[in-house]
Image (cartoon, rainbow, N blue to C red; front, side):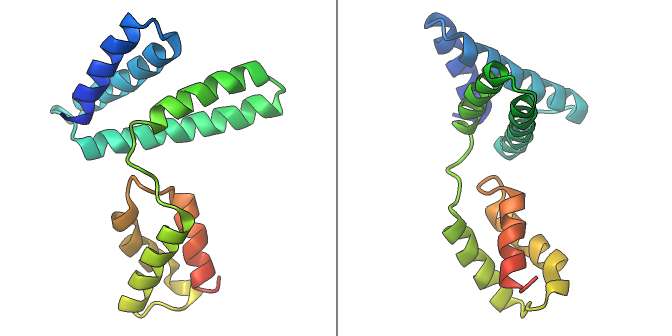
Length: 148
């Protein structure tokens, strides 16, 4: 079952169980997927859907931050519900320790050791953690490892 099929199935299930937050969130995700498919003029792959989900997560995190700054806890909690629903469709996220191990291995294999090598290191590491780790976290870890 593809990720899109799972989303469609979960939408039906959520509608039957009258889970409004989940229905709303899945519809938003499916709309983003549909827009992507129209732009691409083809079907979205699971990897592409994961990238869209990552973008949606970033939007929710930023919105939660802004709502909290504006003292709108009610809206922040709604965004948090959506965030948890979206996260449930992504692959299991890597821990910082797992990211650190992957980064160390790649840095050693490619003899990267100076802070100037950050860009090269990120280009080599990101394909290994794509969809399983946040780029900001990876960047922070790589900077630490390179002594930046």
